[in-house]
Image 1 (cartoon, rainbow, N blue to C red):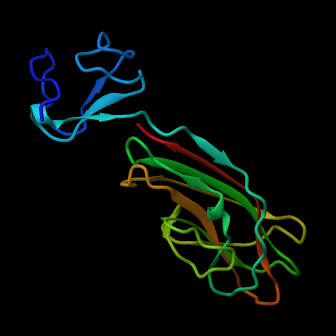
Image 2 (tube, one colour; image 1 turned 60 degrees about the horizontal axis):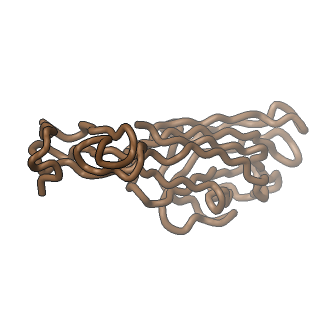
Length: 196
């Protein structure tokens, strides 16, 4: 259906074009938007390709409590996704920045950590590794600087193609190289925002 039939609005020539609102009411543009944050986005070419969309999801930051350490020598989830969630609303393209501090309990031994994201029920602490990786192409093997002096880790990535209106959980997966020396990640922080 042509939303702008009989009005002076040119049809889009392809997908990804925008028609913005400057306010609310019919004076803001030819069709009546509900608020200035709304706009029409094209899904293709032709007059019938304009579709009303809302604004981007608000940026979010999280500083969840430190999860329980793990003695697992295979990757397990930390359970942070139970509270670290984000729902894209506009483009489905989201920038993620996740940081934390890693350590082992008894001696300085290698550990492996990686970022994960997914939809649906978020995994609990200690659950088998799941979700898609974010950050580097491979999980990172590192270690604390010394006992009582944790090492720091930072993961970032632009996630694309996320479903609009569907919550995404974010988490860390972690393992220790020595089962008698539990690995932990503390001081976790996540910053997430949707890109236009």
